[in-house]
Length: 260
Image (tube, rainbow, N blue to C red):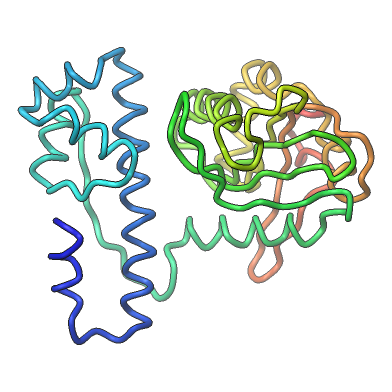
């Protein structure tokens, strides 16, 4: 759907609804683009190959992956079919943001609120090369050229993709206005997970994988964020959500060895 057509359909809506619609649409288009790109890379296919198989212009694939196109459902299904992927479109009853979005926002708020003055926060950082996408948050040290690329996840549906995507975004941060290709900058990664039975189980099952990707101490990373102590390197942090309480944990939850 073109931007003009989209604006035509909004006539008569309340401004608050229009703003929320635009916000959700932008997020959805980014998610679709990320999913298409990740799946394409998983199967080792080029944009040209997927476009030819799906009967879609290659430039349209490029725009979809960049999150700037408004693909039809037919185009999305055609692309998914060409890559051997499934597509699911569902509506979930409820008020306000979806549960996963709300949890991610609460996790970000809880973490940023505790940052020491030594850190500066940048949210939704756009990167363009070698991959395109948005980083949830980048924590920048004020006293040294250090940037911690941070992703907040309340679920881990595909662990291997999350690890690869985090690494790619860390590499791509040099293309952002934030870093600007500064060769002296140190880039590190932080994965902030919601502590649930599912994520703890994954952390135990894939302990070696996570320890390799995030070898630093969780306790040292959290202490650095809270006090400005030296940053220990790539790490995982955990957040517990119970009702209205959102707590950044001092270390890994009970039963999890990664980060100890």
